Image: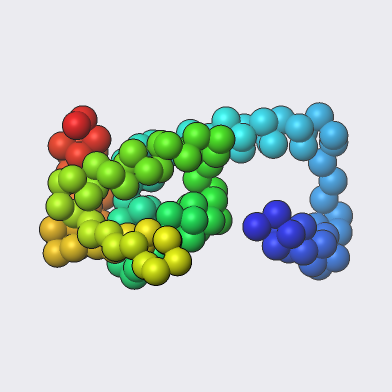
Length: 135
């Protein structure tokens, strides 16, 4: 993702921001604010459900979440796998191991219903996921 952003910056520098300049102090302040952004557990859960509409391995899921800017599990992949285990125990996702030893995850009907409900009621998402997160 970082290379994509660097390339975008180069293109925008040439076309969009030719007369705009930021001081080093201002740039550092912006980077600090971006790094402080915290993604809630509900948002992470929603992203996982959205990504598991199609079958994925944990490794694929990690990369896709990272691509969405979710880094809460960086250095602690147990967080992600604990959440996947909760989803499996609550019958929202199903899993299967392939012959190479990779574990695949995907949504079951209950997970799809939960995802649809959460996407329709964005303001009430916390209540939709409360049961899963408090286990």
